[in-house]
Structure formats: C-alpha cells, structure tokens
Image 1 (cartoon, one colour):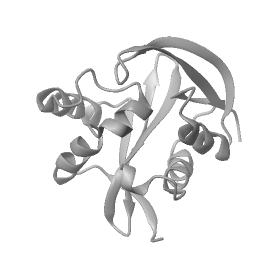
Image 2 (cartoon, rainbow, N blue to C red):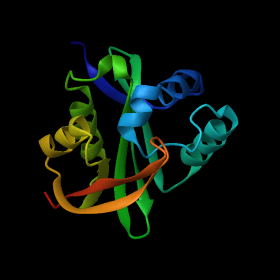
Image 3 (cartoon, rainbow, N blue to C red):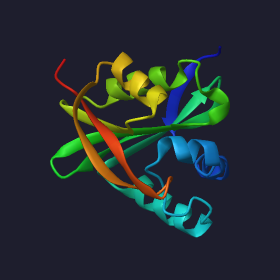
Length: 159
C-alpha cells in the first residue's frame, strides 16, 4: 500500500468525488446520503457550501497522490462531527482508519462526534479503532435506503 495523505479538495477532484458518492453499494452502506445522489446540480451546490463554510474542514484522502475519498469535520450547534467517504475500490485496507487518524491530528476539538448506520460494521470498526466509543442510538430517515434506520452515535473524548 502506498502513502496515505490528506490535502485540500481541488476543483479537478469533484467529478471523481461525485462518482464515488453515487456508487449504489456505497450509498446503501452509508445510508445517510444526499437525497438524490445522481443530482449533479445539488452535489455541486453542496460542495460550494461545504468548501466555503468556515465551520467545515473538507480534505481529500490520497494514496500516493491519487484521490481515494474525502474526510472532514463540521459544526453541528456546539458540537463538532466528523465524516468520511472512501471509494469502494479502497475499502478494507485500513485507509479510512488512517485518514480519520490524520484528520483527528488536525482537529483538536474534543469531544468530537461521529455517526454511522448501526449495521455499517466497516465504518463502526474504523471509528472504534481510532478511539470513538458508542454513546447512543437514534432512529432517523436514511435517504440512501429510503427508510428509517438505527444510527449509532459515537464520541471521542479528550486526549
């Protein structure tokens, strides 16, 4: 495996990110996704908002310089949450875990929160490996599945 890194999301990344975020298998796994993953105009508008918001840090995940996904943090009220999306071709290789570790080095806020569909074993494993612990469950509508599902809320406390 190559070197895993983070860098700013560039305009020339957007087509690949759009394709990653509309992969039907990944959308189902992530569950909490865009209302219509195939709506490019909505995707572009969303990425303009997140890339220009002072409350959002969005970074590209790279492997030897090749775009593999995104990772970021964002404010929700007084809380900070993290999110990540990895191209399915890279699943199961420890890349998401390393990318989240690198993000957490850049975002010193603690506690910090993460969420994952309760049946998304891969994402829950990534979060546990970097120190997040479950603190609750919620039921919410998951657009990626078209139904309400259980979501696990996790938190990483102080250093």
